[in-house]
Amino acid sequence: MTRRRIEQFLKTLAAELDRPARLYLTGAAAAALLGRVRPSLDIDFGLEVEDSDPASWRAVQRAVDRASKLTGIAASAAEDIDRWGMISLLDYKKTARRHRRFGELDVRVLHPLHWAIGKLTRFLDVDIDDVVQVLRRQSIKAPAAARLWGRALRASPPSTAHFQFRRQVEAFIRAHGRTVWGARFDSEASIRIFYRAAGLPLASVSPARRRRKAKRDR
Image 1 (cartoon, helix red, strand yellow):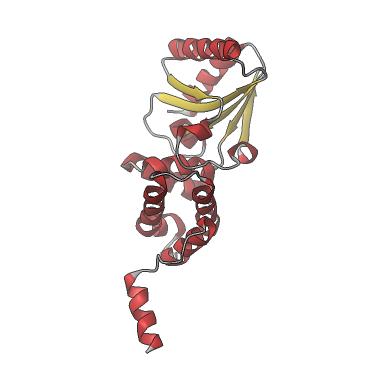
Image 2 (cartoon, rainbow, N blue to C red):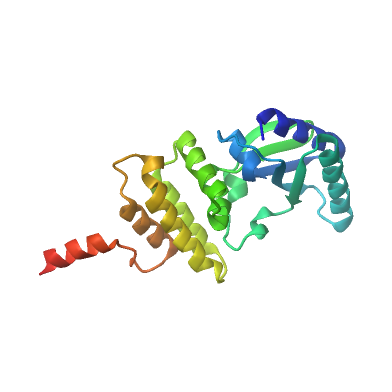
């Protein structure tokens, strides 16, 4: 998915909508605008229109379908993309970055840390590659990442996804943290920040650190 293809779709969608709207871009298309370009044939976004009644959304659906047909790009749209997953995207609308306008369509891109929540929830290899590349290109600080992902977990309604998301964030930090944040990155310190923000007991200390602490306490 290239910037040119994304903007072709957005321009077409704006013409088909023919009404004021605000679009929140996520998924692979957002990654492309954030610096991670890879093959993708779909585009995912939230879409706010002035009227959110069923009749308005039928018109929105027709516009999205028409734009997809004209551009050859599959699209998934929702009024609130926070409902797509079990882990909260927090205040993603407030932190989204303005991209540009296409007529009456105001296009914004999710902040990299909010965008990464969906990727870390799904946790396929391609998602992890996306997160690594985007966080590196956007110069995101490790404590900010750990803190926001912890807040997202804490704000999410209870579900079986809680444990899975926690384990996947820990796995990402330990396996890829140095690739993103450099050789001096302390994965256990970031995991502790994540746990505190999530309101979880600080039990995620590596076995090696536990052994060293036990020796010091003797």
